[in-house]
Amino acid sequence: MKSPALAGSLATAEVPCTHPDTTARFFRALADPTRLKLLQFILRGERTSAECVEHAGISQPRVSVHLSCLVDCGYVSARRDGKKLRYSVGDPRVADLVMLARCLAADNAAALDCCTRIPGEGEQR
Image (tube, rainbow, N blue to C red; front, side, top):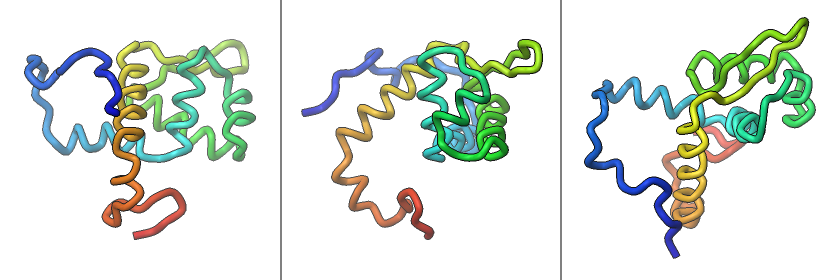
């Protein structure tokens, strides 16, 4: 059974035209499982770097690299609070995008599992 559409079809909506390379880069930022895990964690509320490290279960320097990518790509905002950095998602469309991606992935799980052209986590091409 297909998941319900979140916001209806955007196929006919007028949106600013971007080059396909720009859109591909936009999605590549989410193609890493750790970044996606961190983004989903931050979607539930503002988080500190330390909370992100604990949640991800990897070293602070690696989490920092992933968070920097999410900030640089515009998915997450960072603000300084004393010595801490706090991360949040300012654009509600990010939550919609992640939810839609999860629904589509669930609907197409069998096909994705069989796909040999895109490596899974821990696999190399």
